[in-house]
Amino acid sequence: MTQFVTTTEMLTLEDYTMNDFDIPQEVLIERAAIAVQEVIGAGSFNLSHILVLVGLGNNGADGIALGRLLHQQGLSVSLQFVGNLNRAKASVHKQLEIAKHCGLHPSEKSDFKEATLIVDAIFGTGLNNPLPEGLQKMMKAANHIDNDVIAIDTPTGINPNTGEVMGAALKAHTTVALGYPKVGLRKNQGRKYCGDLVVKDIGVLTPDTFAFSL
Ligand SMILES: NC(=O)C1=CN([C@@H]2O[C@H](COP(=O)(O)OP(=O)(O)OC[C@H]3O[C@@H](n4cnc5c(N)ncnc54)[C@H](OP(=O)(O)O)[C@@H]3O)[C@@H](O)[C@H]2O)[C@H](O)CC1
Ligand SMILES: [K+]
Picture 1 (cartoon, rainbow, N blue to C red):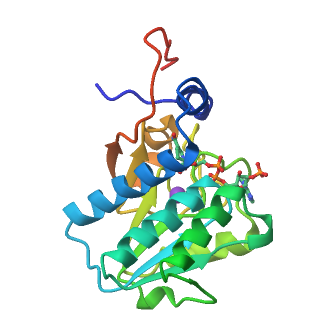
Picture 2 (spheres, helix red, strand yellow):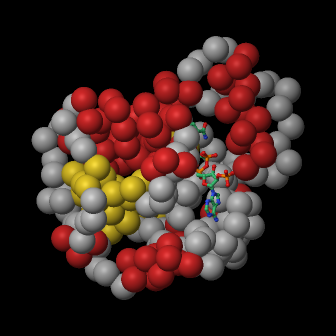
């Protein structure tokens, strides 16, 4: 039976892993990227041109690390930031520096139609409000383009706890849940927008005494 979690529970387990075992966040980000790379490699996706849509939090950091790994595989990858990079978390800046050092630089503006596969690394469990208007329009437009979307952790726009669409959401062919799937992926619109749900272990540790609420 798959264990689903709330975002609070996920944060508790992330903190336990990083603080009690001194496992750096970068390790979890790298393992998240490798996990999604494995799903992409195991699938039958058209990898001719991969567009990674990157947000300003750790979901975005996962996406940049994944983009770097795919670039190093020799695949054609574009990194497209969504939002003002000046407001990005340190993890995003760190992954961006590594990616640029490996020869992968962010694109100014990408044409969604040219992408054969889109990676959704905009928002994950940190989504806490309806999407900004501009992003809602972008998600609605992207949903009308015929290319596969792989969502990292959660589809952008889906409330990770309630499964509600927060103004708009990007429909995924496949969602790769990191550690544990979030409960919003089996509720309301979450189930429809997440597509095939693949749960991947990224080394998040769980205390034996941990009491899951679900
Ligand atoms: N499960 C794990 O062990 C790991 C998960 N990882 C990944 O981390 C994300 C969660 O990262 P987080 O930085 O908490 O949040 P997001 O990246 O989802 O969101 C980015 C920030 O965006 C802001 N935000 C939220 N909602 C909105 C909105 N509607 N409009 C604009 N901006 C919004 C918010 O910042 P605030 O300052 O507003 O709080 C978010 O912080 C998880 O999904 C995984 O992909 C780790 O990388 C690896 C371990
Ligand atoms: K996402």
